[in-house]
Length: 201
Image (cartoon, rainbow, N blue to C red; front, side, top):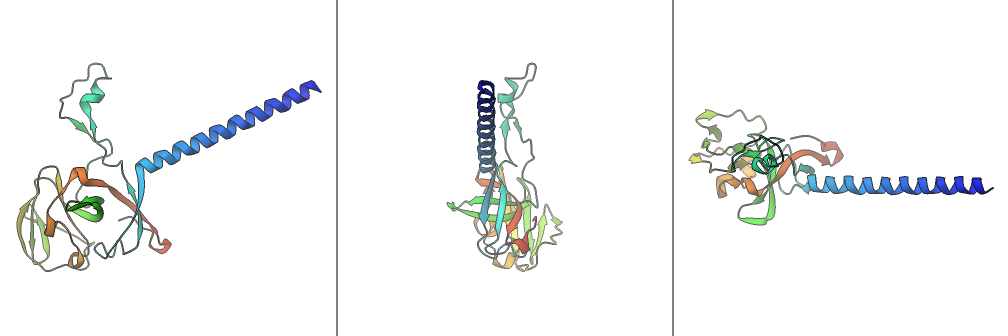
């Protein structure tokens, strides 16, 4: 009888331990997801038709993570690194990426746009056609061109030139300038709601 009670107690302790470990793992996964992925609601028609008003999107907040190489080098024998070296393990923002960022004129507001120009690029718009460094851009995602003409603009260092896909109804870098890299929240991974509009921009 005593052995049966001991066996029962052992099984109970094992089951409790497994339950605690499962809960701890779930909490850890949720914490990681909250730090790395965030959902946003699209407001307005500026990214039509890829992202419509009221669409919900998932944004990766770690995709453009920067790590100072000099800090890593302290833990790796024989690794010399300059103080200004930066490692982006998942890559840097690139032309064509759809990003969510803090609006430069009011950082309490978040905008979603597409990167058109990289740091140092010359951007010119000729009757709605975008030229980057005098090269006409193929932009199949643009369905409502604006038809406007803008003189050459040089994108600032550590900044990006962004525009909405619906050029005729987009408030973007044409009106208020470049977006500093520090204002970028992350890259849009996918639209997830409504279900009939699940897509990747």
